[in-house]
Length: 392
Image (cartoon, rainbow, N blue to C red; front, side, top):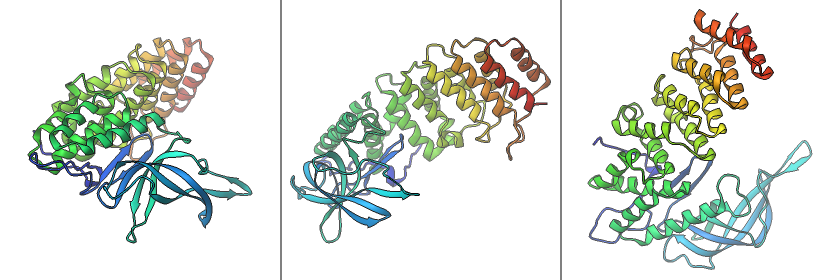
């Protein structure tokens, strides 16, 4: 087993001793990261808490534009100090009204009296509580409210348990089909190992997670992201990581999950650790799997094309063969159009320091020309023509 370390800001601290009850989530802080663009910070103990709350009053104050402010009342405490009671009031800043050339608008809905949400709150030196990141029931851009509620309730259950039972519950959470709940399970298990390196079982479970079919896709992706972030090439070369890639490359997904998998396999963390053909192989397999939804295959093809912009080698035969196969036989016009567009990206001009972009063999250009000559779909034919024009 290779030794693991994780940035403390990504750790859920789970306590060290089996002989005593597990402490609340405090210590270095419990941080949550949600890959859909919404991040939140949670830190139990005396300074932070996770609560359900309702807006009791709204107002405004000057800031970056005019800030919509609110006073909220705690209706339930999911994680936090015992001194934090239901009924406690705290203040938050909501959206800013920003005037762009006379067009007053807001990025999110303004706070309204009576609305509910889940809030991460912190306590200042004078003892007053204030709201920080939040999940508002009325504003669901990234995550369904029901999923967020399930996450908060799972957090509450975990905090109340002693160490051994906490780890057992965390393992059960890894099987959840709810994305952020499965991610929470992974983070708790890894946090236990980080807090106490003797907790080898907690980490070994994550290392071999790709081979465990009872574990949900979301937990597999989260564990992989953690290890990639810390170990990059070392984790890529690990056999356990190869098992994860095999699962992600072959499992048939629902549309939303499949797009998330493709995004993960081509994310910044992954690309820093991969070189073609390692990246091309799993993405190509997803693109060529007719059992995958059209939108998933289309996204996989798009990511193969986008590799040109990500400064990866683009003359790779695997990528070329995959795109040609898609053009010849994929039943979806949208997927085929995306493959044709990928060749436009590949055709250049070269993006330094990526001199391979724009370089095709004479044989490859001939294949493209032959395909364009017999292509019946006008949109695909026109796009292939654009690629061939660039290659002149």
